[in-house]
Image (cartoon, rainbow, N blue to C red; front, top):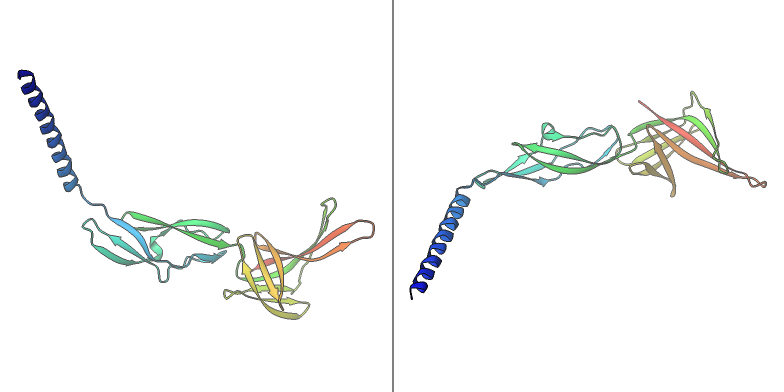
Length: 214
C-alpha cells in the first residue's frame, strides 16, 4: 500500500507539472502579438514592351494590421521595387508597404514600340554557316510597332498594315493572313526574306535586318 501511495503522489506531481507548463504555453500564445500581413487585392499591368515604365493603374493591396483590421491600399509607383524593362524576360517585382512586401511576376517582351529601319542585308551559307553582311544606309524601308499590337511595314514606298504577336525573344507579324516569324536581337529585328537552293546542293538564306531608331 505504501508503494501505491508513492506511485499516486508521483503521478499527481507529474500531472501538475504538465498542467502548469501547458497553462504557461497557452498564456504566452494569448499574449503573443498578431502579425500584420499584406496581399494583392487587384492586379495591375503585368506585360510590358522593352523600355516601358511600370504602370500600376488599378492596382491595390489588402493590408491587415496587428489587430486584424483590413485596409484597401491603392498601389503607387513609389511602392514598386525591382522593376526593369531594359531587357526582355519573365521577371519578378516587389510591392512594399509598412515594412511588408509581396512579389508579383511580370513579362517584358523583346520588342520596343516604334520604328525599325532597314540597316543591313545578310546572306548565310546554310551548308557551312558562313555569313556575309552588307550595311544599308539611308533606307526608308521600315517596320513600325504600336501598343495596340498593330504593325505597319513600308517597303520600297509601299505601306502594308497588319498585326503582331510579341514574345520574349521573337515576334510573329501577320500581313494579309500570312504569318512570318521575326527574330529579335537587342534593338534589331531580323527577317528571313528568301532561301536559295542551288542545283549543285548549295543553300543560302537571305535576311533583312532592321534597327530601332528613336
